[in-house]
Image (cartoon, rainbow, N blue to C red; front, side, top):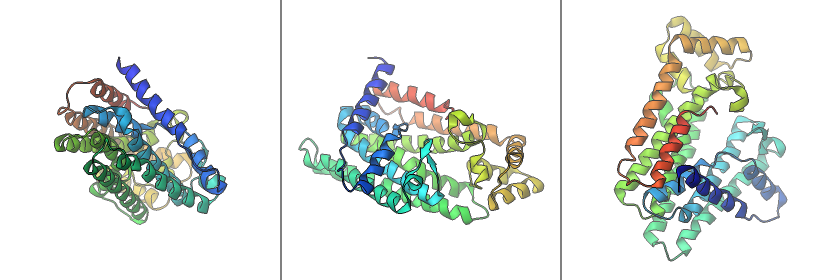
Length: 331
């Protein structure tokens, strides 16, 4: 089996498992939004990473499907609540649950997805193929990731009111909000395969590096990506006055006049393309775009170092190939 065939097989398993998730018909107000959310699609990278983590540790990837589903449900739960906090009308190009229904419905449906995530994990407690220690470890990893996501989101909300945010605190935020679930996906997959402490530690670090790079890359794509491919208008983060890797790096690098312009944007979101272009020009003149690209590459290279502890396999080849695609992604 070659890399392309292997990736297709794993993704086919994931989509099949997602289709098999059966939610009750009633109450419609609770489960219709859940079904709607899962129908919107997405990259499904977290369950894919869970299967890869299992394969890297010598396990049968299919055994990691319940863990992958749990992480995917948790991820979508966070998106429903994110859209409420951001008052977002769109999610993946369609009306958000918040817009299509209302905030109360989005809260309850998100909570239901969180509960169903635990139902997926019960598989490991009920199947004699897995030890009590494995089940406890899988639950511990999942719960820690859920807590880290909440902490990351809380930091993100705090940053909206802060005049200045240090790079150290920003990285702490994205490691919680974005990297935590990616890291947990790999590690849970490894735990399903009874990976040893060294393997699990490297899977965790591998996921953290990928997740960090992924979020910084999102910050960059907001500025340089083709809006049609990215699915968002150029400079959306600038318009919303969000703190990003680029804005923080610019504040640390700019002169007095540039810093003043940037601070005004962060404190009071802009609306016109002219203002967005002005900020992007500052990013360009300070070399922030190129520095950000270098940082992304650095995190991806760090991630690859954590794969060295794993023996050669189709799953190792898979994730290296996938990583190369992530590095060059345009959306």
